[in-house]
Image (cartoon, rainbow, N blue to C red):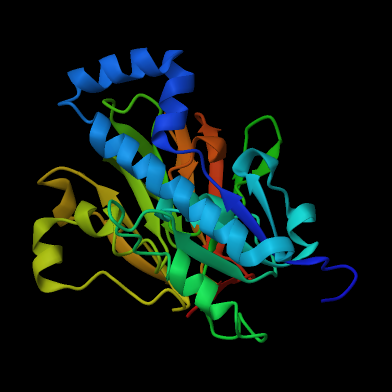
Length: 304
């Protein structure tokens, strides 16, 4: 290890649902009362809590002074650069959040509770990760995932960068039950006015999730919308455009290649939500214009 990389791994943990709910509801007793109203979910939630704590303990014992452990609120790009690799300990949602901070460092995803989480985006269990760390060259096998980057140009002249999108970006009316209204085009094609329940942009990593389920039923039957996480494209779909609209909208469902730009002009009190994270939600009011394209950067995801 170099002097700049004092330790091999920075492990970003997440608080368990039980920990968050005790804080949210004020006490363990109140959390259990709420759980009884939710079809008696205490055993499932608390069992997962214990397994996640056990995962942390195993990593701390197995790695010793090779790793530091932090929670997501302490994560920053500058901190990540002091370590050889960034590790996400949790599920898919936590992995996607942590990935925004990886930069040029390898990202390792560990499923903290495989019993209750499928972890489609994370490749390691606690045990398989510890076994791999016995190899002094680890991590040495990678996937390079594509990401989407965006900019929002507001009518007052301010421009905001949305940061990297690892999975999906949603564009919709801030009031979810209201119709989303906007103009849309790719590159220099003519603008098209649309009404729908919103747009959903997807990378390869996001194409197996909600994006797949948002497509019209006929597309799900006759076309495979999923694509590789390293494929140099991204896709979008206009959600629920209406039975008649879907027959003549040019931008119902499209694929964009590297160098293409997707533009949207808002006609609504809208919002743009990157990777379904509340920390990356942006206002998208009337007259604001957003641009999206493939990022020049890639996410370096470690494989077993």
